[in-house]
Length: 114
Length: 112
View (spheres, rainbow over the protein chains, first blue to last red):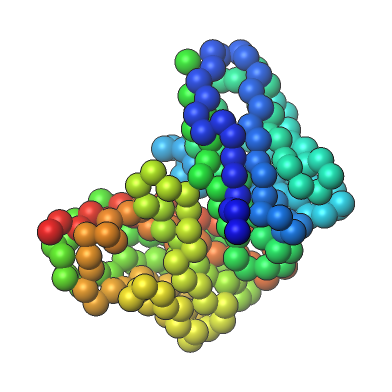
């Protein structure tokens, strides 16, 4: 079946612009995660959604970052007023439930802020 | 806080060599432990996992044993292939938590 998909695969933007990154989880997966992979910080957790529960936003690095998940499926990560340090690969993952061990990752969106 | 430490790369080996990538963790309780692999141009894939002490995870010839006494989960393979060239990430997930905590990754290159 289809895996986790993300779009766009690459995004180049200018400092100060807003960007939206999209994630389509595996059908039927109730849990969705965003991670960021950067040279300086490695792979770090950003935010977690489980069903209709309030998301765990504990990993968001600043209030410029936000995410939503509509209809319990597609998720959008928004970065406002992008900065150069936001340049990274943004990874989305999903799992059958929040307690499930195995998270399935998408191919990522490479964000470059000029 | 919880953390994972992997041996620094890059690691370069010849085909058929024995591979060990060290991984140690710091966490309270009994986390689940994972190895993920990222092949060139692809997303992260789960390679193997272990959920309790002394469990051995295995897949594609790779093995790792959950050692509670040494808080380690070292990845091993007896005979590597060129196709094993990738970046390997060790990770933990605490009981009741949802996020994965990753090590910094180890880039492995296998030469023919």
